Each structure stands twice: as C-alpha cells, then as structure tokens.
Amino acid sequence: MRGLYYDGKTAVYREDIEIPKRGEDRSLIRILLSAVCSTDKEILKGYRPDFKGIMGHEFVGVVEESDNESLIGKRVVGEINEVCHECLYCKSGRPHHCANRSTPGLSKDGCFAEYMTLKTENLHIVPDELPTEVAVFVEPLAAAFEILEQVDIKPGTPVGVLGDGRLALCIANVMHYAGADVTVVGKHPEKLKLFEKIAKTTTEHMHEGYEVVVEATGSPDGIGIAIDLVRKMGTIVLKSTYADKANINLSLIPVNEITVVGSRCGPFEPAIKALTEGAIVLPNIEKYDVKDWENAFVSPAFKAGFEF
View: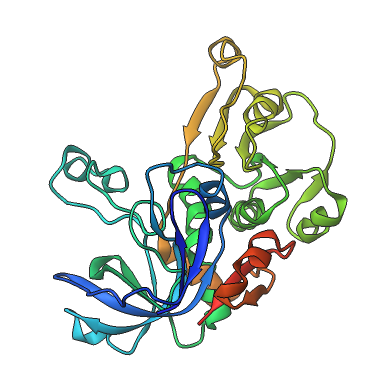
C-alpha cells in the first residue's frame, strides 16, 4: 500500500508498505481522509526521536475488518491513545496517560497510508449527515473540548487564545461555544480574519488581560507571553507541543499564583455533536495525494490532508 513513512530523520513516500494485520480487539480501517497536524511537522524537527513508522493520527476511515461486526462498513474516527487498562493511570481514571499507551503516528504506525489498525474500543461512528471532510476535524476539535473538562469556563469568562493558527481556531470556537468572552491574540492580521465572527482579535500583548489564557502558538515563546497575558491567580492552559525548549522566568508563576494546566487529547462525543449540528463550522480542508506530502506540510490552508 501507499503511505508516508518516517525513517527517523525525514518523511519518505513509499508504495511498498504491507497492509497491516488487525490483531485481537482491533479493527482494520481503510483510510478515506487524513489530516496534517502541527505535531506531524514537529516530528520532522525531532519531536519524537525514537519514532519510526507511518505518520499521522487524524483520520476518517471505513472499517473493513473488526471483532465488532456492527462497525464493519461504517465510517469512523478514532481516539489516538491505545491503553492497557491495567496500569496505575488506567486504574485511577487517567487512561490518556497510560504507562503502556501507544499512539498512531507518534509511537506506532498511523493514518498517512491506505490502511491502518486501531483498537476497536477507540472508534466512534461518524453520523451519516456529517461529511467526511468535516468529520476529519473531530480529533483536533476534541482536544479543544478537553479544556472545558479541565477548567471552569463560565459564560462571560475573559479568555485569551494565544495564537492564530489551526489549533487556535478550534479552541476559539469551543470557547465561544461555551459562552466565554473570547479574544484571540495573534501575529497575522490575515489569519485573524477567520476569528472575527467568534471572537475579538488583536495583535497587541497587554498585561494581565485574561482570567484564562490558552497557549496555542506552537512556539517555545508562547508560554512567556501567556504569563504576561494572564491575570494574577488566573489559569494558563498549555496546548502547544514542539521540539525546542522554552526559556521562561518560572518565578512569576508562584509569585502571581498562576495555575498552569497541560492539555492534550479530549472527548470525541461533544466534538462530533457540535460539528454535526453545525454549531462549530471550520474552513475546508485542502486535499493532496500522499505522494505530494511536502506541499501538504507547507500549505498555508487552515488544514491540509491526504485523500485516499
């Protein structure tokens, strides 16, 4: 099969990859559409130095083989953390941090290929009325919904979203959906236009501006700016992942009694519901053939991906 393989140094388009065997409690999924995430780009910069394999973790596919026969022929999206259910974290209600977890495109073969396998329990059926081109946003949107699981966002809460890229747009939409008073702080006026219906926008960095700041710049500089933007005794939610290290004045966190929350994957159900109801509308994905992966990785579109 065709796919995009990371060899430990760079991505390589291949046509000689074997179709995977599904194994027990797993499903074989034929990929319809997969999407490029900032994390995929960071892998090429050394973010996961021990990883070798097929890249990608955001997808919509059709189940062709499964231990759950009711899934066969269904379009699905999938949660990316495959967990053991036996370790301390699984047994204490923190399965996303399973000590033995594996993650497509980060520690095992992912979805930038014609087929992939995933634990059957990780799959969610895509409603018939939800187009594939929209359903592909479920995974990144779920990561934005995770913030609502971690932080008490009441209607009217002043929330600053730091960043003007793809992840920031998902987050701003979810914060708006929750009724927050949202301001997006970005660098690019042309990108900020995408946010105007759901948030105030600015390129200025004020001090102590927001009760909650969500850092989604994808840059090591973001946390320092977030510390400037958040109010004393406020909350910073860190969403960015990157290969580089950040250089910040950590003393400001205890002095100003700032709460810092790391935030990663999130619940699929509210993301599917919001997209299906049209409560959250995101720009169209730009489709590429996987052999044209280099152009997809540098595309300025809101989201680029591979159609199979």
